[in-house]
Image (cartoon, rainbow, N blue to C red; front, side):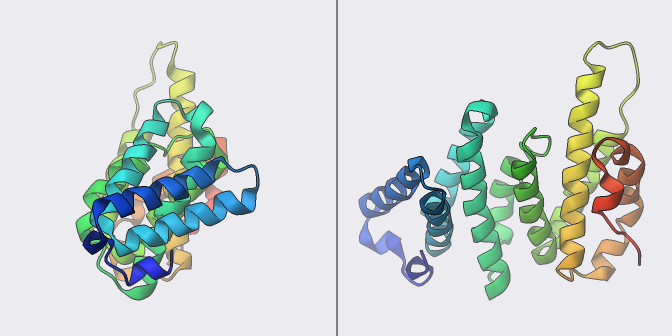
Length: 219
């Protein structure tokens, strides 16, 4: 995985890239957690070396797991781990992630309301790192999602309790992402203008998923 950060696999042919990706994804099926984690780590770092080839394929597989998350939660978590390594490597090395954000953000947003705590935590970490890298792109999107999940009309809809749970989980994920960004010393000046929107999470998400304990928005 580390080697692919400096090797342009496109010069070696698409077949080699496809074979290597299949090898890493096959590692997701191993019974040993260490092998699965190593495969996800390597796939993420390999993608950094060839974003055009690997990132779309990772995101396509991630989208496929969203249609049946219960059956695919293990793969979802591992694919998100790969995405996290992509984002983290860009952040640590000062590599521009902006061209890839339009592809990555919609796939991460699919899992804002996941029933799996681990999946939501992984999404929050990815989004938090993205805030640090591209705050002017990510923060408006999270502000919009915050408004979507905290301004629902209360009616007689029988599905309202379920929707409430989904909204609460989404609020928790957004709050945790902001908390992560703050912990990683994201730009205070960039965050400050969005704080009033995120403070709403303390009211609307706090009762169900302890959002208030998961986010500190003090200046």
